[in-house]
Length: 625
Image (cartoon, rainbow, N blue to C red; front, side, top):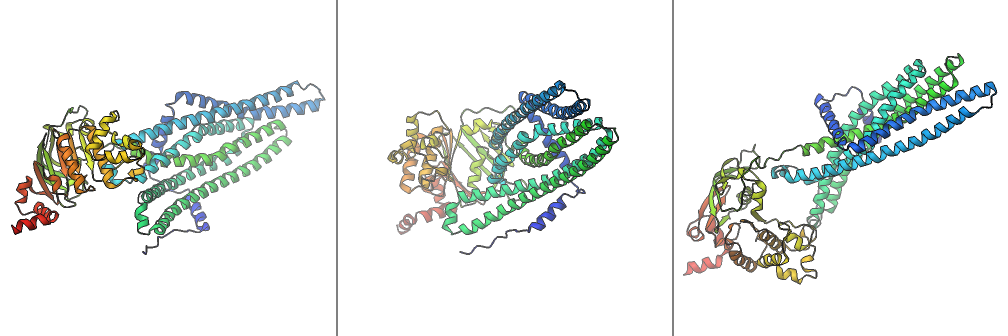
């Protein structure tokens, strides 16, 4: 089988460097809205940090301590040099002052190490707490968002936001939040002390500080754009990886391994190229910062030398000035790392908070109606479409009524809207027109949790968790007794199969139930729904993977076990609907026929056509008689 060759971008190194230089151009125009969003993200992250007052207090204590220690050390060194010169010049043998200076240098250095530990430890604690809470909030938000949201966004995209973007925010909090405060304080007070030693030296330091600040700002803006693209490409990468893992059997069945490998490499190449681009932008910025520092350092040495020779500056004060400037080199060089972490945090935060700030389209009212059991469902002229902007309706003017002890059958060709109708009853989606009531209460006024507790859906696309069979069956009723689990498994005709397994009900089914057949998964799903004991059971073509004998046995068991409940059966099989009190036949979103099974068999239409196809022998014998 031939697959088209994917385009794999392969830019030259020189082109990437040129592009990186272009990215550093000062005259970049970002919209006011982007700046505003960026500020809001940073403000929000900072607000989250200050929830942990204990760690913030200890961390800021460490910042103040380490800044004070670092600013005090140059003073001690300069003072020590001046005293040494005085002792040598006077020929004195009293070294007590020098001993004191040396002792203070040792103590200050030890305190600097202690304060550094406080910053690192408390930064990690704040970062870990924030990422833990963000993961919890993100997962909770995904559980609350409507199906219409999940229909439009790929799970790989959500995984990228829930893992990589949260880590991007956490990295900034761990390594950047407290360190940024340290850098700003160190540069501010270090600059003041430089001016206090000699105002000319202080002015010269501006040659270093102003271009550095401007370059850091520009680099941050460019890196934020790059990191936003990187996170988007990571989402695509996760999507492709997830699709390949889930569809590995399809890929191998069609011999598409090489094609999928090329697609994955192409996506990964995009991530690699952008990552290299971010490194180049950051490295170029760092190199320019180093260049400005060396120029400033050389000028200050020259000015200090002139000042010392002219007697306006002592050798100790010169040393003090140079140490202050050298001390500023570390935080300035750290600006590159901080800018990169900040740019990544803002781009990750924008993507992350976009999900966390979403409100579900479907939610309970502030004072919803309570629901005990479902006794009656009635639909009147309901109209539904998944996309509100679409002109095409999925369902048009659908009406039906079903009460306790009754079975409603739904049949129709593929794409007629059968499953869509089933998803309206537990309010996975809202209708656009008409009314849908439960116990004569508008479904939108009922508490969603109570509603879904009373509705059991058995879908044709069965999903099983990577847990034991027992845990899968008891998922909706985790406190059930073992005899209740076995009883439901017997009704679903799966108990004998489970007992034949070496570990019986403690057998792990594997991811997505990969170790089971389609029919076995459907029967476990039936048992899971029955154990929940809902007052409404919806079979959404959930017997399609079963043979006719097993299908009939399960239906016979269900007649006695759920006879008092409302049952809605969606099926392509005529036999599955033979006990229905009423059947509605859907065609292109409209009800084309309705009636009892016997009534529909007497009329020409979709139902009779399906029956003739599924029971050709019966129809032939009938015509001969």
